[in-house]
Length: 278
Image 1 (cartoon, rainbow, N blue to C red):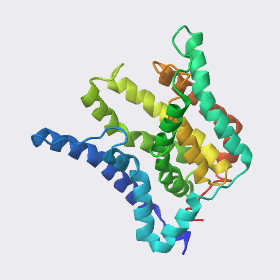
Image 2: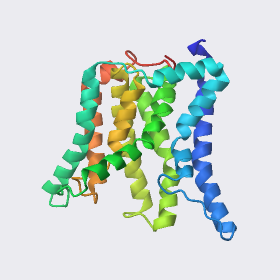
Image 3: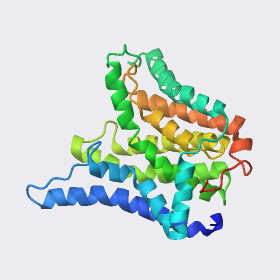
Image 4: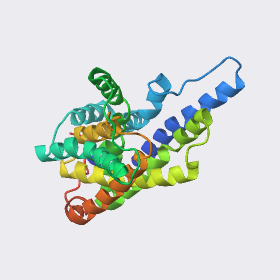
């Protein structure tokens, strides 16, 4: 089995399938709910259809690899999903760094006179249950975004350019979710255009940070899975109002710092992970 069997057309197919699943399901669901009396499609968190949307990058990855390389390729990729690579320092940095982004963001909100830090009131067992549930959602996106799309992009572009391209596509993939939320809960606070612009900036910054970590850890899928998981956790000591704005500011600052200090080594054209299978 040769890695060269995966080409740019397979990357395009991956994006088409991923967007087709993720963008098609909310649209079909809302259309059916509106036109068929007594019929309602649930897209709420942890519903079967929401999992199908969130897992679309992973689903598309296995489909495309199966088409290009058959079962041998699928098995080889599955082995890579559970292979931990890179030094322990990268994992420690993620374990400490990602929660710290939320902590620093909360502290900065408090420093400017807004509600940021709160006394934790969520029981530990509830937090652990929610944390485990969060691990079944967004982190599985990484089987497609960083596990499949990023290596193929890095065969053609630098790490930084690949991170920017993938970050924009990753943010664009989320757009229907914002419109579904606006339909279900009313207009988003601050206006949907402002929210989307801020979301794109924050997501692209996160893509730069995750690409740095991914290349630094020698193409470890578990480390970006862990990063995404920690990023999505609802930390019990933070006041949610306004925190996401400050998180975007902190994320952008860290992305710039990563480009300045680590960019030559992990965002250039060397030390890039360009392989798909183990």
